[in-house]
Structure formats: C-alpha cells, structure tokens
Image (cartoon, rainbow, N blue to C red):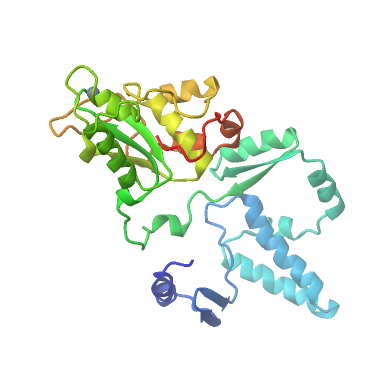
Length: 322
Ligand SMILES: [Zn+2]
C-alpha cells in the first residue's frame, strides 16, 4: 500500500493485534514479516479452494523440505497449527492427501476460458460449477479488501481541474452532456465565450442558449459525471450518459455508436431532469444513477470489453471536445 497512511496503519495494526510477528522489517512501503503459525483463518469469506490451497501448500512445502525422518513430526505439528487456525480434522485430512498433478494439469489445459467472480457463498460457487461443465475456469476473488474500506488519503481535487464527462443544465430543464480531455474549467470558459459572442455554429450549448424560448445555461451548476478514464472509455461514457439523460440538448448522440443490445440496461437507469428552486438536477426516485460518480451498471458497461467491441469510433478526430 503506497498510501502515506500506510506506516501509521501498519503500526496501529501490529499494536492492536494480539499475536505479534516473530520478525517485522520495513523499508518505506515494503515489509518483510514472519508470523508464527498464523495462516488464513478457516472463518473468512474465502472460497473453500483457497483455504484448501493453504493446507496443501504447507503440506507440500513440508514434504519437499523435510528430511524423511522428520517429515512425520512436521506434518503432526502442521495439523495442530491448522486446527488452531480454525480448520477441522476432516478438512485437513482431505487437503493433505497427495494430489495427482498430471490429472489437474490436464484438466487445466482443456479449459477454454477463465472467469473472475467475487466469492459469494451459495451464489457464485454454483455459477463456478456450471462454468466448469463448459470448460471455463473460475477464479474467485474476495468481495472486499481492507483498502476498499478506507477513504483516500489524498486531498479532493477541484472538479473543474479534471477531464472527463460532465453535464450542464439549462433553466428549461434540459441538460447538455459533454466530454473533454482537457480540464472541465477550460471547456466551461469556451462554452461561456461561445454563448457571449453568439457563436451558435461552434457549440451546441450556444446554439441552445440562443434558440427560441427562455434558455439560460446554468454554468455554475455544471457537474462532473465521471473523471477521465482514457480516450475510448470517455467517449463510451459520454454516449451512455446521453442515452440515460433523455432530456438533453446535445446535437448528436456522441462520437461512438452504442450497440442496441445495451438499451434494456440503460432504460432502467434513465434520468429525467427536474428543476428545483436551486436549478439543480435531481434524480427521479428509482433511478439507479445516484451521484455524480455514476452507476455500477454504467461503470461496468464502460469498462466491459464486449461493450467496447460493439462500438465503432466515428471518423472525427481524437482531439475533439464536446
Ligand atoms: Zn434550455
């Protein structure tokens, strides 16, 4: 963990932990620790195969390292240690059995793909069994790590200094979804200038502001929807947000083509703009788009390789900002 907090946290953890390591060496953010007889406990929410792996790895290590006359004593000691880490006798006995590596390697070789799933007992382990029947290997990951429970130690950046996808509301209730690879503040200034100079041909924002009706662009309420995640992901995110914000005044549907296959998901996360007294955009109850950081569905869609595969980048240049 490269966070400035890591030193304080690691000392705090060592201080409060009832078992002390035998050896603890640290250099900047690298540590070398020797714990005695403390391994992944049988209780944590890890896939059984990962727990079996702890037992079999320790057993295998003992078999490889120990002299034959000491092996039995070492395995006996290992069993006592594993029992103190919460494993029962049956689990230990099964996992300690010598494995047929050839059979396991042959099975691994015939796998056609690999799936990464969070381990949720009685849900994803069942999915894993189904995938196994179709020769898809499943790698189970813990659902939450300690780092995810801690807030970032870095100072919050000014949203205007960030590149990404943003939305600008108008007093008529519609919004403009835009994207920029530069800072949002720079793009904001350009839109303001276009409006001031009446350059309707240069920006859709100016075009809307100058169109018939009572339109005042609420520049001060511009919100960053998603920080920049690179060129393609930013364009994908823009087109997704345009689909989600049904009441928008964008002149076109983004720079990339979004396959219709995603419509049912996007339909469920649509946002209707309603003006409040403060002219802020509010999300309709039931809408899954809650905060300016976006939804899980959208993040998934933005990162998912199949979503990206279904996209065709238009001929417009990479430097264009919306
Ligand atoms: Zn308007």
